[in-house]
Length: 442
Image (cartoon, rainbow, N blue to C red; front, top):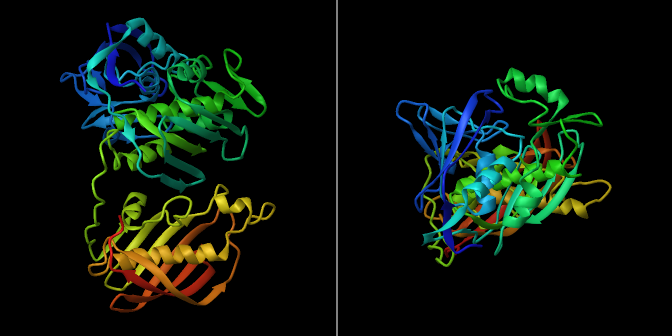
């Protein structure tokens, strides 16, 4: 990891067509001052608006990452961002006379060549990478994303389609040499049966076999043969590198991605963004959640602020509703084949252990309990479990709706009833008693 920031020495130009918009575009890359990050400037607009490549400016992630602010948009920025991240370019100005960079051959190879042609030079300012202090994890719609603390940037990626075709896996430590020789030339791809749907969505207007690989059953349609036997997972890693550069600084983490896409990449970056800490700077004391309104919902980032649980023992993906007036809470857990307990329970017949269903109920109940009164930031512990019943097995692909109602609360002791449902079917139920520890969780 370089210790100082870098930009390019001189401007370079390239012209081409945008993948999704089909617009002709001229791209000029220019040096940028320290702490600028990557900037996209629309020189075709009267006000020549400039967009920062930051996570807060992402407005769309359907088959590409789109930045926007007001009426200004720039589509499909991930390949340029990947090239900048892969070559260690911190500050870069990209001028465009249309709303999407050229797709070139569907990879980041052209942009890497441009940066090399321009020359990369050091700047008089320290580089401050993003350092994770704790794991970040979420699962949704068959995708799992995990970021673990690490002293370098590593990506472990598994990709496949919805039908489980073309499963590929690759783990790489990402540095300049690895990115330049093993990642940047991997091209974008799609399945043949997706093409009509993509056209109907107004996408891939500039797509062709010269800038994408099309998979049709067992055949590969492309202007040239595959560049790697596992080119598809390598392109997924390329997209991860680019999308995570929306953090604005290099990331030190081990990213584990199972069936990722731009939406999940950006969601992971958003989850990490709340934990941005320059290297060597101690983390501030944990914040105590503010009391919510009488009824509210919590996304995974807010759940992580309330519960001390972390991967692989966090069993709540989202809180759909907290109703403090009725003392009720509804949580959501997506059960995927990637759950670690399925390795041994059972290899040939994966079933979610009943005790973990009870634990999921307890975690949802804890959120309700820790939002009551002055309990925010404290810790809830099990005292007893009663009237436990299991009605149906929970298997991969099930979505658990976890409903918990507080039955009684006196002092620091709470009693609650929980139910786990899959659709309209009751999977399990239990009554639980908790104690709230009168101490803050560090």
